[in-house]
Image (tube, rainbow, N blue to C red; front, side):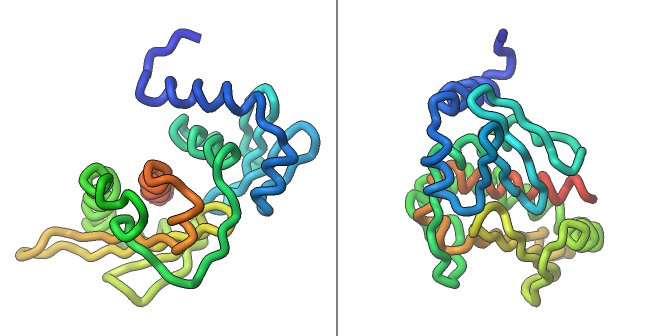
Length: 203
């Protein structure tokens, strides 16, 4: 395959190659939510089930809908390759409060928090409608806030404040505390990106 979009295709190709040598029994031992039927893994991401063939990678949506974009597919590959079940302690953390959060906070703020603020804080009613279509759990925080099951036992919250004449729109994303051990910092950035993109697709 000739690679044209290096930012997305090079990482995907790297993890696709690693995926070929993955032992399915290792995956199901680390991740209780992942099913393996001998030819495909089944993974649920934000309420949608995807079947991922192994060892020759292919992905299909079990609801018959569109397959996710390449960065999301890379995230799923990294989940199967590297993540594990970590018990949620019941607390919520900001990105900055987790390991390496301070180092990645600048790109995270632009890619996730600012994007969420100006995507949803300017259209709060549409945000509410989209979040409810996705089955989000309403929260009493912010001008609008919802909780989502991202993948496995990992949960996320997104809170939005509408802008006015004095203050710009604002947003905060919270992670269940098990993200600190279960995902690398770069994957937590991508998780925020995936959540925002998915909500936006329902607006």
